[in-house]
Image (cartoon, rainbow, N blue to C red; front, side, top):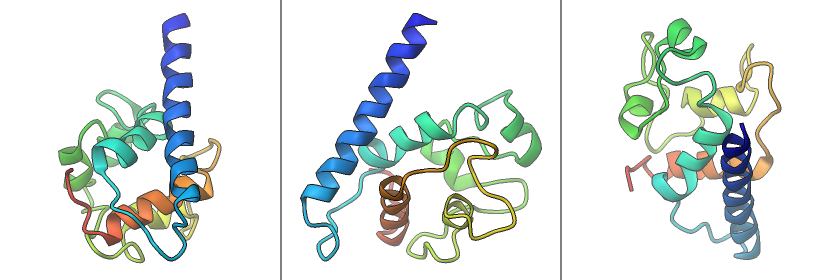
Length: 130
């Protein structure tokens, strides 16, 4: 349990660092390259993997496994959740931004505006595995 708390605190710190780095870079008019491994995956680990990993309820319900880039891009049993280059229609963005009848994370604290911006920018930049 103690190790889990350290991991959670570490992931939260990493996400905060990314958000502060983006905020300090003048991102509003100058969005830098968003990396899956450095920027997106830490958000998924911290916010989504509790439910969307093998054997967890999110995978059982939808088939969406977020343990890897390949799982994210495979999507759900109903179809893809990411449309590279178009965050407006990507279900990942629609759900975390609360633009659908349900919101993700389900029954948990909402993603921060910074986390949402990172996901949106990554998708709009082509959702690359980098």
